[in-house]
Image (cartoon, rainbow, N blue to C red; front, side, top):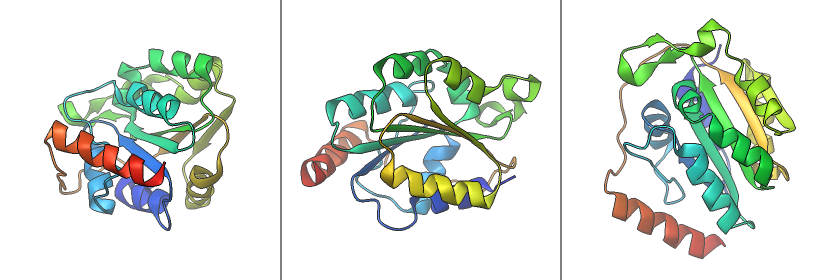
Length: 190
C-alpha cells in the first residue's frame, strides 16, 4: 500500500500546466494543500459526495483544460451516481482518482464498504468509464502521474493507500476566495 500524502505529491510532481485539481472532503484536501497550495486547486469544504460532479462541471465547461478529481473512498461511495453521469457524458479531460484506505476517515475511521467487497473499479467500468486502473505500488502511481498530463478520455483510478492520519494542512476555507482563485487560474491557462 502507498502512503497517501506521498502519493498526492507524486501525482502532482513536475509541471501541472493546465491541470485543475478538485480534492474531496477532508484528507485529500489536506494532502493537496500539503503538496503545495495552488490557484488551480478547487478545495471543497462541506460538500461530501460532490467532488466528481464539480470536476465534471469544470471539465465540460473548459474542455481545453484537464481536470483531476482526487478524493477518498468514503466520498466516492457517497457519490456513486456521479460515475454513471461521467460514463454517459464521457468528458475527454476528466480523471477521477480515488485514494482507498477502506475507512471513513472523517467520521472516526470506521470500515468503509470497500473493505466489505464494494469494488469501485468495477463500478466505474460498469458505468461506462473504459480506462480504469487499480494500483497499489509506486510503479503504478508513477504511471498514473504521467497519465494525468496526457489522457484524452475519461480515466478512473483506485489507489490503495495505507490507513494513516498525518497532521492536517488546511488551505483557504473561504468559498468565494477559492472560486475567484480558480477563475483567475482558468483565465490564465485557458
